[in-house]
Length: 130
Image (cartoon, rainbow, N blue to C red; front, side, top):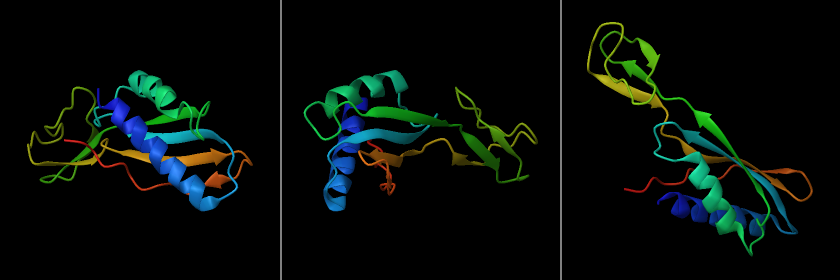
């Protein structure tokens, strides 16, 4: 289950940001943008996040995930569409098969709420695992 490694990476990045900020005693919430094509199961991630937070500055923090729908663009006719799940990568406009994924693979920390309520800067995207 790669959701555990994602949860651990989130905890590490938020902990590092909190240490750089100084005087942070508690993290209240972490908001993640998760693309529908990222291969992440939100319930599994939430379970792993709770485990990964135990005994850290993030213990008890709420994980808020924002789903980012998959979108594609046809390189032939420039039509864009929601790809859905399973992804439809053939252009519904012209039937073309040359497409670019524009959105849906995101996995990044969008925001963090500290104890004092001030939002922390968003972290760098979490690298996808192969």
